[in-house]
Length: 75
Image (cartoon, rainbow, N blue to C red; front, side, top):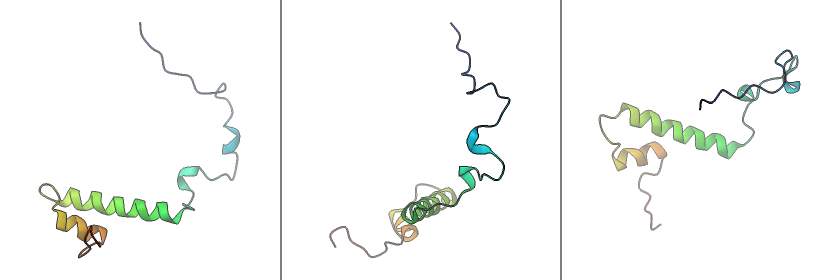
């Protein structure tokens, strides 16, 4: 049995109601959640550092990227 792709909602002749003229797509709207934006920036920094590393990212380098140098888990 083969599966066919699920057709898009509607008949495809008109754009969805939230995509009318002057509507900014959600992907290009600015983030309103500052904490989320900061988390994404940290994640991006880690990904870039890991991609530039020749092997596994050393713990000290990870701490530097995250800005937690000299911080102990017991503090």
